[in-house]
Image 1 (cartoon, rainbow, N blue to C red):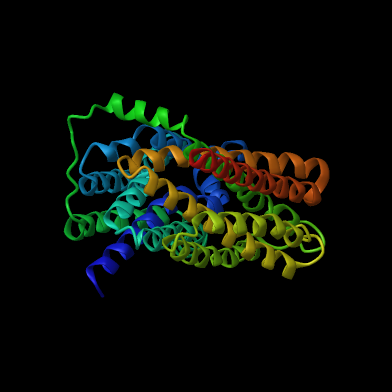
Image 2: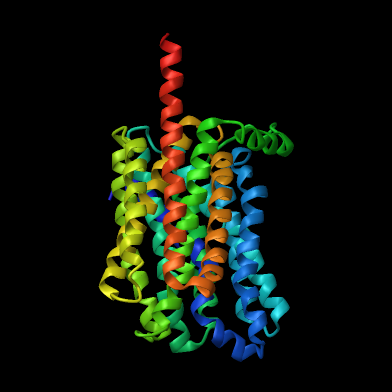
Length: 393
């Protein structure tokens, strides 16, 4: 295996393990609550705390990648995330568990620093392929975390999940320091200047359009993955938590979407791929909306939706890192803010709509978000064409 392939694999594994620290609690919330004697009302904080830490890290920590050696920065972030996992594993009270999860969530933004570093280490001809591989790691981490958590919790209890993740994070730190090259930066640039440069991105057409596409893209994604368990647990299916979790395996098809989209982006088709994938995303809700009638339709819908989401996600990152190659960490961090807010809106919206109108209403909401993303892509493409035509005139 070549050095480039080894690095690409290492980047993917870093992303998978780091993002897993945020999601592993979801399938074992009840077990954690029983062990710590928590009321159901407090269980939501176990997931929310990690997400809040992650959101803060996106805004405040990711831009550091444009100031310091990212090899060392990734290593430090991985170690501090391991500390958070260790605190969670040892927690005997809710406050210590939340402190550990908040710490892990804060430094899980190592994913975005890794994505930016991987992009910069790639040649222009292989940037998309690299981003596709790294994004595949993120997908595997998000979906695989549920499988890993369920298996480990069944064998050794929920604390074993955090012990295993802490060990993996420490091991990855060693590999980072050994296999990745140094990444010198102009440290004379101040932190304030970097944050100002991030704020200026919000006046750039490409950044804002791709960010808004990401917002609606992941709002649609959030509608599915935060709400699908509701109709599957209800009649006529009455599936168990374990059975519902198996639908995540279908979502792993998104990894293929990320890989293929990366290769297409390298060939100069990132914008076309975005439009086509958004059409697929919208159409996927025709199948997923049949959750009360056909489980096979749901499987098809999940595969198509995850494939489309990751294809758009990789294409967006390819375009942004190519256009803002001088500040890749900042642009990825800013872009992911749209991702986080979109995911939150989708998750909140699907439960509210489901309680009022059932899964049919949630499916319409998911399709509406997808259509909004498609409209923004179309308007942006037309705007870019008009600008180019005016320049020629």
